[in-house]
Length: 144
Image 1 (cartoon, rainbow, N blue to C red):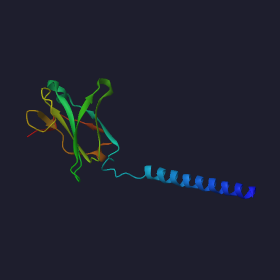
Image 2 (tube, rainbow, N blue to C red):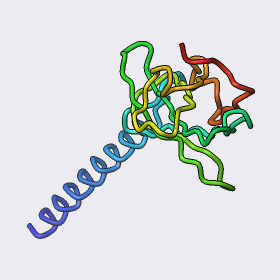
Image 3 (tube, rainbow, N blue to C red):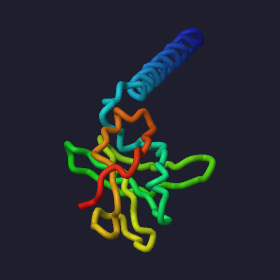
Image 4 (cartoon, helix red, strand yellow):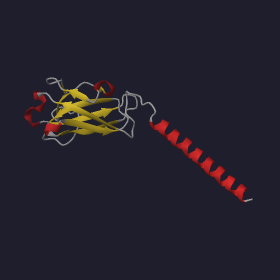
């Protein structure tokens, strides 16, 4: 009878380990799943380094990034952090496909596309085309 109990305990332990290994493998494959390169998962951050032109740096301007998803309409504004020698970065969490960088009047506090508050902007930039970096060339587009 003792041998039978030991056999049952070993069988139960083996079944538990097999279940645990299957669950671990399933979670690992789910986290390694392929992500659509045109957007970013809502649980993931998108960070883009922004190289500013000398024109954009004029007049003590401030900078923001408008992240949006052309398919769902989701959007958010993010400040561009200017860290001197570290560079300029914009980050946002969410499922976004595009970004527009905006040069703004330093006297305003709101991020928007209102002329006078917003001076210049980029075109709609597809995140998957940027490889994490965008360089402003000249003035880019004026805000209308």
